[in-house]
Image (cartoon, rainbow, N blue to C red; front, side):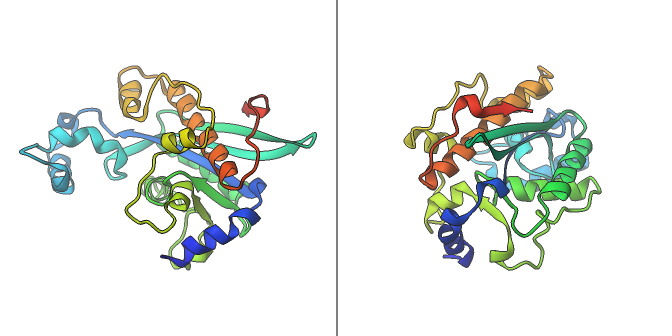
Length: 248
């Protein structure tokens, strides 16, 4: 078990939620169909995904997962949530950066981090963030020629110096092979979950076929909300009431 794991558990009840930026990202393949890739990219995709190709499958057969690999996907939405207090009640503010121009999305998100979440007391929190959201954001920023903000620039840092919170890692309790979805955790912790008209598997289709990135942003914000509420459950604190949640 890592030092970061024990540190996260010990510190959980002492973390100030007002210093945490909760986030979730939605990603899609850079091109919708495998045949839209040039020949070199097709060969590189084939080499990258050999481990996925089972029972005679081809590179094209597994292309539906291209969005989850930063080398072949792109970010179409970053949703964030931050908690403040008004009239002695916790208020959650949700905000999304979304659209077709990934570089502009990342620049706007970078500005938020560099302006408001750039000190040692600030934390980033996501579900499965350590294995997906945080590295994906960093990789796509570099690919787009953007300097990494301090919150994502972890090179050379000791584990306890990385200000990242992962609600899935916290639930593992040292069990490295254990994966638990956000949907399952919200269910067992009795966290209200608004009915979604799409799932993660629909995001690529909704983006490329329906051209409805606003719908994706609404879905993404629901995951941020669920992550905030799950974090509060971990701490044994009351959930944020629906009337105290706004999208800005």
